[in-house]
Amino acid sequence: MTRRFWRRAMPAAAVSLLVSVFVAGCGAGPPGDVRPFADRASYHIGVLQIDSAAVIDATVRAFRDELSRAMAPKPVTFDVINAQGDQSLIASAARDLAGSDDDALAVIGTPAVIALARQETRRPIFALAIGDPVGAGVATSLERPGGNVTGSIDYVDPARLLDPIMTIRPAPTRLGTVYDPSNQNMVIWIDALRRAVAAHPGLQLVEATISGSADIPSGARSLVGRADAVLVGPDAAVLAGLPAVGSTVGGAGVPVYVCGGDANVDGVLASIGPDYPTLGVLAAQAAARVLTGTPVSEVPFGRPTGITFAINKKTMNQLGLSFPQAILSTATVR
Image 1: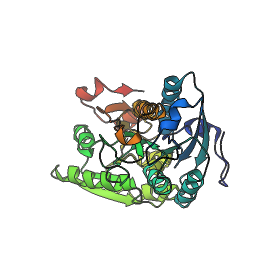
Image 2 (image 1 turned 45 degrees about the vertical axis):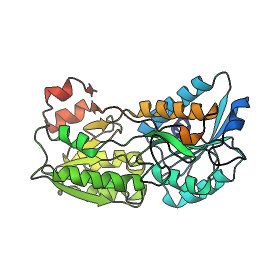
Image 3 (image 1 turned 120 degrees about the horizontal axis):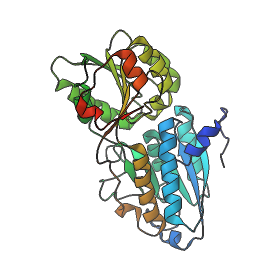
């Protein structure tokens, strides 16, 4: 069931990925007290999703399937609010969920996690693929969150992404990126990307900032002619607008790499990063521990263990790029 609070209608495909990301448990005790959960016959989850994108769909599907499996035979239902990439709606959506009677809450997108955590301090919140929960101020550590937020993280040091990209020929000398600086996750990620770029002599970083999904086409256009490769980080708003980046930047003959996004988007060359469906499973496993009685403060965040490549063969052939065998031997090429 989807709450239709926003003026923009939500596409049917979004509904499935709306079973999104984070679960929270209610209770009248102190923060993280989830003892009432263990005796419940069913669970109703309120979901706050910052935006829609194919990669989120796959992640949410994995989260839904794993949580449903883990909690069976008890049924789990979901009620969704989708902010559709509109930053002005996140705070009001968080207030609505915080005042709801849902058994638990779920969130995807770092700004939405932060907004909900400010509104809801008792029920546990399970964040799906948050970048840096400690830096965002919603946890004291990854091993022992200490508050009412846990889930999974998607942070991968940009240096681990950039190093293999620099082995693809021709190697870039000007690396572009586009991101929303209001996303705390991306502020941390971009700082790390700057350090990674500085470690490669002769490589420059070209940045384009946006204030929401509507700015993605203009942000992408601003990189054309200024960058000879583009790396899109784990920004939910930009991932939702990835077709605009692919058509604008990739259409101009510039390779587009995306951190964990959809390599099948026209104009995108490759996805490189964590396996997001696996992060959905890790978040569901954390959620199941909470729903069966473990305090949120004691449930560690699930973390990615490696990176994967998915290559768009059509774009690779159009650009005439040469991937080293070390990448091709383990990559998915489609």
